[in-house]
Length: 389
Length: 247
Image (cartoon, rainbow over all chains, first blue to last red; front, side):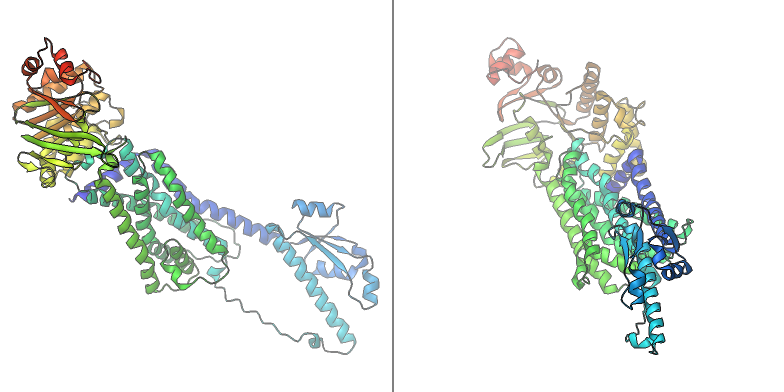
């Protein structure tokens, strides 16, 4: 058995014996998916619920009985307007309210636009479905009424409808749950970093802190063999954590009794396999970076400080991409983290993955793995690593 | 046999701290050579150069005729090192700690098991060998570290302050082990800042002060050389002061 394999095996044995760290790492990885999906689906479901039975407080309903009758016919539940309606909308207790102007009947009789006020707070995400529904009901009523007026005057209603807009939504079923997509990709990516962290720190800074590095370096194992063995162990463990995380999402989406919320979201065995393939460069790269950062610390605590920048970068990049409005440039696929996030999103949207893109997403991470491992090996062959206990 | 000739190692940006400054001595096989000196005399640096972990700035050292720089890999295979840093892996048992080093030295299968069993037996580790190392006492940890250093049956053994932090019983058992190795014809180099340790165990004593060899000889020769009536006085006289030494 080669020394690299001996070292990797020993690091893994040690990790699996650390029950508490193991349990925490694997449990959080397995539960992340189900927990977040439950929250999101709950949110989507309650939005759908609100939209289906729009509860609309109406003030001055007596001025526009025809409008109120239309709204009721369309399924809205008409409520009396509370006195503190605006305050309650601000507080988020009420989604939307309609106030009919006292001059409504007179304006309508004169053939002028009759005024109604729709009150809402658009900054509240939860209220958005109700707001949209109230607005579209009012628009529909306005159109209907206008058409009737024109017919009375002998004009075809189509005269006032110069545009015939036919909507064709090209979103495939997978594209609908954008937030769900983002979270699955985000967690898969993050698992590659977090998964290897405890082991990487223990194997580098921990080895130094425990004073077991010097005797190890005095064995016939070369610095490169030692570093390669440690990397192999960390990468294997990171792969396990990524696998558990994705399996959590897969099992939740396939088998959990989630509410039927109109997000025919696909994350089947095929997507799971594609995810793993896309994340492979990260499963290789992150452990190498973690080892490099860990080797720069004399104690685990010191190394943890070095890690914060990496964690920041990995957690912020996908968020930036989520908010980026423009289409991503083609070269982005070659950038570590960004490229993987991009490909994960494509995979989730059901798009085909070009082999060229996949290969490109490997180039930079593979080079960085080599550089990072070489740097750690150099550090371990440098006598400075023995200084300062 | 260890042969050291004019070995130099300096630290600091411009090499202004000469930790080891032209050290020469030989440590023959079948003897225990003691390296005595106060803290900061350069003992650990000297041993690290012999263990191939540091490269000398000048001079050369050979172990059984093999240069520690040029024949690094071969030297490592034949050298057992009990360094100043002797941490174990706390989640592995004592036996597994030793087996790991055996594997790194290329031992496998039945040969490895037999060798590890023999060491466990010889060092009296049978009772604790299968418990995790995190619960070990200082003495137990030391014994496992020795087993680890001896697992490939090296011809030359370097020990850096091996008695640090040990109780009397552990020190006695360590001495027995080292005498056993001497009887088997091994070359032993043993560093300490404790006079009694060195006197009780070593055939030859190399006294080190400020990175230089101050005197070399048996205990009797050193007393004669310094003209002192006790060994303690002899060391103080040779070093110029007793600072940093323990009785």
